[in-house]
Image: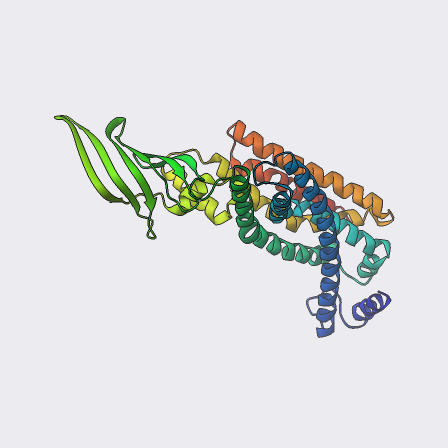
Length: 383
């Protein structure tokens, strides 16, 4: 730390100035070293905080699952379920962990006068903010990968495993009843198994408000090309000259609803990736169905990911104030209070938006925009 301060002093007063247009190679190298140093400090503290938060959240999740043990779903399965849920829980907690970790890391640097040395050497507040934002950008990428490729599939598997174990059903029995819409056609699936074998299927075709036909198939499913295969189909058509009944032992139908869309309709929004959410939102909107719940989840996920970038910069504004001479406990309390306020505001607005039919983009981005405004205002006041 002493060497870093000495190098900064020599570089600024002897060879370059951060406010000038020309920077020597040594200056650029030193800036990179400082950025890496601050990044390691912030990310290491964030990782430590995240581990602690996940331990607490996992413990509460496991205790809650113990009350629901039945059938084959016992303590080992509850432990597995909790472990599989941890990536999604980590995604939800990363903004709070980034704030607390940044406060602890940057607060320690300020307490040791390292940030003061950087300022004295010529680093402006905006330069420090850019360095800290780089750490946030790295965590933003990690958060996006976690929320898109790791958390949702593991969450979906955990929930499916839990249902199958609790009710002691084999794959041939496990299934859910479902209604789906494809234009003017409504499908009622009596059983949706993990292999997308649907059992009996009822099909209602409409022409506007007029019912054109009713069909029932004894068995149905999807082939590898997402074509619907209907066995022992019996269709009753309503026409002006009477009622006509058609029968076939095997019929192949093409609907817009694919196995992916059907799986999305049965999964909870938390168990869907952003790509699956967008695909299912598009399907719902094209079929004039309510997509508010899925739009809210999508924009909530995007705003939460973006907030990870803001949190380290917000923490930087605090270390120039009273927290510079405060202890770790004070910084921890400030981080917890702000993090809880953000989390509660986000959850409340997202849920109330669905209840009162508010714009999902507005209600999900409002907490993040508020934090950004507070961060900008706080940094602008630093001299």
